[in-house]
Length: 406
Image (cartoon, rainbow, N blue to C red):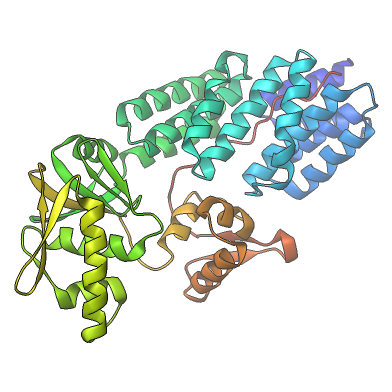
């Protein structure tokens, strides 16, 4: 390995892409192309970075499988930052296997961390947690360890484990300080701010207030029956009933919970569940059917009793009832929640993360764009969507492991 390639790789690992380019900018051999691609990615020139990395992958010979796999890993990381969650990401598993087969444990670990990060982004927490458990952070380059612990913190935050999230962020902060890269330290600070920020809104008999993650965790462990509008579930102690895919039942449950300990009128329930302004006999008949379904669904945790004007929720053992909602609600709130990370998403990536069809995601984005809540740039398949000035949990800095070696 020549000295310029080695020096460029070290500069990239230290977060200095300009120094790396000074050493390899005029070279067109495969290792130099790969390092130039990483440097351009760190500088934000993602389109040019992808071109260089793919050129490097093609230029490496048939006996340089590990080098090609490193290019695939770097290309996948660019795709991840670009929120292209299919495409190059699909080749990550094969690249990781190739790296492990050639003894490149550091870059294999980096590939595993990237896959865990992708799974976190699309909400597949169980898989993300299992994937992260297969990665030894001590094998990662120092800069990538910060990202590893940010992913661990993200999983803990979504699992409502405040202490675990704080511990992971502390580890991320220490890893960032070890690298002496200011951008990494700033990213950990932003993640810490997200942990401290309100994560949900509590609606209870004594009014509404914002809750932090630790307060939500305490609420879930209390003797309160919680109608969780953030996850479309109803919880009481260890009993959890999911109403995902049953919007009418969930709307009725939420309306009853918001009215508790009083009853909710039939007119209110019809308006909330069926969006009907005037309750006629057909609405009332449908309400009776849906209340019967909800009564059977909630039987392990509460009863639904009829009153002269409507229905009332009667918890079996819980001492209180509350609704947990997003801090800001409204049409297309789930799309804005994903865009809140400040990154540019493709409509296909949003569809994957939301579990809807690409056309549904596109319609939601167009509606938000008309309202001025999102912005778009690019053309054709390169179109990306962003939500301007929306704070949120950040992604880790694009700092792949060096691509030198065969």
